[in-house]
Length: 309
Image 1 (spheres, helix red, strand yellow):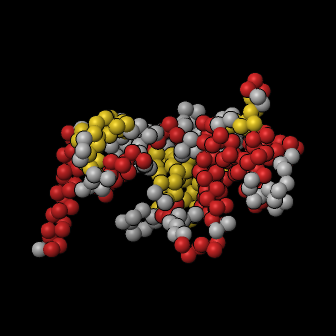
Image 2 (tube, helix red, strand yellow):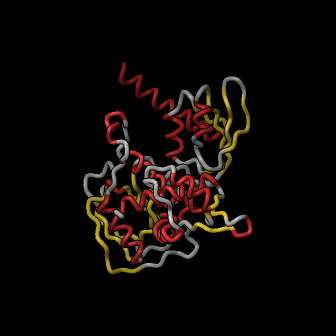
Image 3 (cartoon, one colour):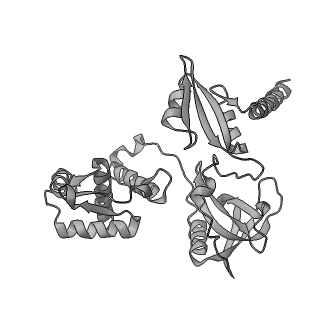
């Protein structure tokens, strides 16, 4: 069997078991026979067990059997399939890829967004993280005429709004706030692995580090605080379906709008998001953030006035 065919079966198994919550092998067999992949041939126990082991090795997803409840199968570590996990991203990407691969006749009717893969940089950065060695970057920030060389310890990578970012600490600097850096892959001109080793701080957890932030900008000048935003008209439905932040909860509603409470750092990228939805999304609390957004809107209006004047 081709590798691509095996992956399709792995993805089908995980998705089927995940949707069912718990499922017996007999029911799994019935669903399998109903697919085109089966070609009318049953899924043998030995093949199922091999697939189960491969899924754990490749995706880190463990399929367990509950013998006390009629020998039913379920995802034993469903927590790894949380929304922003690598496993969920891989599974979702491969699932969509499989569906599109079987729909080539519709290729002119399926429109996708381009996400730069940055394969070479991604490969080198991941290798540096695995080997625990520093990276030498030639990096050019927006607005700088000349690139700059830095040596950094790669802590983690993050995908945000169709761009890849590298987060880490400048090497040989004290672990103070200003030693942390985040670099966009597309601004890295050159990258190479060094022989300088580093140890990831035991207390560092990438998910926990970013959990109180909106995107990729981090700040040591702010603390997580309660932010209330008001979504008008149809925007309230979009915010419900696609929460701004994982801490989001709805705290009020009327005929014209709904209010949502967030607990996070009010960083510049969050402000940019609010401004991008300025006629539909309004900050209500805290007052200092309301004033900051007002000032940003005033500066925008002045630019338009000066341009049209």
